[in-house]
Length: 160
Image (cartoon, rainbow, N blue to C red; front, side, top):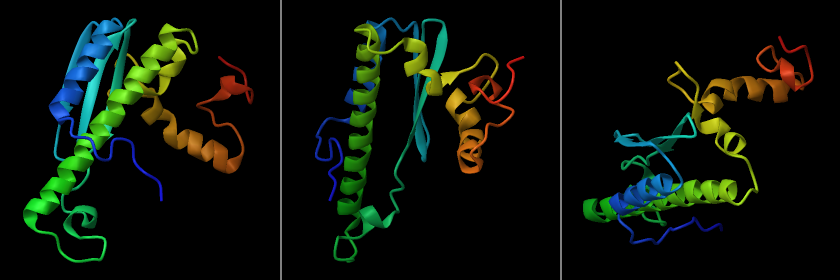
């Protein structure tokens, strides 16, 4: 059985968000925003002239993962809420780790910023990240084993 990162963390979500803010600012972010809804959260920052967006799917508190025990019995409302809050804290810790690791990898020269954050970059005038915009086309390209018109510069066609 695999073990999730920070599965038992006691770090509050607000502290993880604050840590992310501090981290991106330390590495040069000029803007920072945090947004939440019932189903997802997001971190947005601007760095090196790029708008970067990380979306974080939030767990459904009504999911059986929280409302049922491992044996299938109903959990009390308070136990279900406690389990759900733990899952939320774990996700925020994981996001803090990912962002910090990416920025440190850029800092020491393992990767370049534009490559490391490409999937999370919001192109000018767009409301979705580059990764979100091309995800389905990439899935189809792999499924069909051929490049799509969206990706001609990768070797299958001429770049205009």
